[in-house]
Each structure stands twice: as C-alpha cells, then as structure tokens.
Image (cartoon, rainbow, N blue to C red; front, side):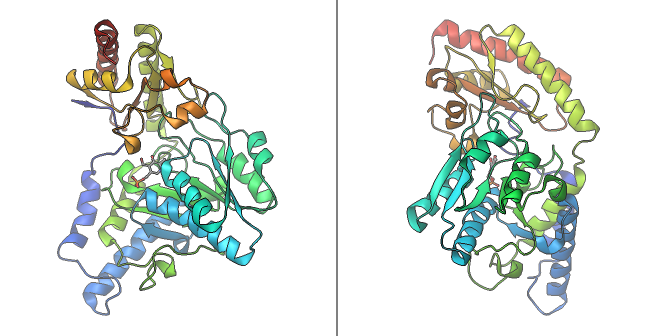
Length: 384
Ligand code: PLP
C-alpha cells in the first residue's frame, strides 16, 4: 500500500514512542502529586514544555498542552474572544477566513449562537489565499479576534501569515493561526510570524492522536474552556497527558522545517503534480501553485466523483483522501473549494494526496500511474 494521506494522520515515530514509553509505564506519576513519582512526571512535563517552546521560539509559560488541534483551536477562538469581550463588552466581532478547519469555524459559530458575536468571513482568492487587502476590509473597531490558518488542510495553500498578523498588530487586534498542517513543514517561530496564538497537533507530526498545544503570547487573556483543578496555569484543567506532551515535544524536535527535506519533498510533489496533469486529461490542480505545503498535491478530476476515484485508487494500492478526512463520509462539495470559486460539480471530484517526509519518487511515480488508471476507469465505467 502507498499511504498518501499524511495530512489526515501519521504513524507514531519510533523515537517518539521510545521517549514517551517510560511515562506510560514505570514513571506513571501524576504531575500534581507530592512524591517522587509525581515530581518525576512534573519534571518530564516541564521538559516537554521547554522543548515545545524551543520549537515555537517562545517561553515555556506561553505553551498550554491540549488534547489536540481541535481543542487548541477552540481554546484560542472562544477563550480569547470571550476574555476580550469580558474586558470590553463592545468587542463583539470575530474574523475568520472562508477556508478554516471546522475546529475554528464552528468555534466562531458557537460565539455567534451563544455569546452575541458577529462572524466576519474574509474571502479567499482562486488559490485559497487571503490577501492583506481582503483582511483589512473586514477589520472593525469591534473586532475582538482574527483567526486565519497557516496552511490549508485540503489544498495545502499557505497564507501570508506574517503580513496578516502584522496588519492586526497595527490595529491592536489579537491574531490566532491554526498551524496544525504547517507544523513539520514550515517555520513555527512565533516571533518571526508575529502571531499572538498558534495551534499545533501531535498526530500530524509522528506523535499519537489526542495531544496538541496552544501557544498564547504572554499577557494575552484567555478564558479557559475546561474548569477544575487549575492545571496548565488555570488555562486547561485536567490531569496532564504527560506521555502525550513528551511525544509532542519529541516529534517537534525531530523535524527541521525549512531545511533540506522540505525542499526535497516539494520537488517530489512538483514531479507528481506534473505527472498527474500530463497523464490525466482535464485534471486541475487546486490551491496555490507555489505557496503550498511541500506535502500536499490536490486535484479535481471533472466528470468523476472524488469518492469513486478514491475507491478505485485504493483497489490499486494507493490510499488518499477525497477532501478533508474531518468531513469524511460526506460526498458534498468541499466548502474550501467552493470558497475558492470552484463550481460545485467540479468541487465534488476533489482528491487530496499528502505525503510524509519519507515519501519516495518511485512511490509517487507509481501513484501517478494509478491515478491515471483510476480516473480512466471511473470515466469509462461512468461511476459517480
Ligand atoms: N486544524 C487543521 C487545519 C486540521 O487539519 C486538523 C485535523 O485534520 C485540525 C485542526 C484538528 O486537529 P486534531 O485532529 O488534532 O483535533
């Protein structure tokens, strides 16, 4: 099987498993306990926090460990908007882009349904990018928070985060970015990016599912979503997932964004894109041609259905995704592609291929041939 669905999830890396193993077994203490096992767990957690902070170029106290990307996004969007509104009741608008993951979009909708916020959507261009002009046009004096993803999970388009964050900083509006897909591929330096908050998730990086982190710049107020024993400096109550935090920090330490392997994978991706476009008549690349994750190639195959192509590809030994795994099971056109101006009947023919750093040219060559065959069969048989 050729696994080309790394944007959905990745296997746990051996080094990560080895690093977390002691905290699942002999060193199983609760970091809040006042005995040696507890102290050892607390030390491991502090170490993981320092490692995560180093990868994000921030202070350890600015890291909150969460149960994953979804929780980090919820905490950022709801927690920061609610804290700002509590301090200044006139701040009652949140801005998100038209291509956010549901974890951000639904958090904003929750604020709208239950807390009287208005949600302003920044449109994207045909490549799925938010321009600084488009963002500036929706910012208002009442804007409490802006949340725009770093890289898109369906088409891989990378946003000009530094410029977008800078625009918000000039107006004193906090800026959050969902970096779940960017982590491992793009620089995560929070100072360089100029963001006030950033979400990451372990399972996209070779750590297990169910752990992630939210960076929040010092002195930024966040209303907690989980109340209880006051762990994570009161931001996220609940006994900490020590092994998960160790896993996340270890996985982050193993990736070196911007260095050779991302360039290498981007070159393989471009070769794959060329082969698919040359081999499949009518195939359309979706997302930005160059400002895209090294690890994502996404297409529409007009006249097919994404789900049928996916099934045919799996029969040929290639596993990928017909859109976002988070919306799996639905054959509806992707809202991301619709926001990019792709017609609905074309959008529902979308297929996403996403790689990990170990992908090879031979695998991608084989996969491109399988795509040609799969699309050919679907079109010949008229399966939809
Ligand atoms: N944000 C983006 C962009 C994602 O791609 C995902 C998962 O696919 C999430 C958030 C949610 O992360 P998690 O699966 O850790 O909850």
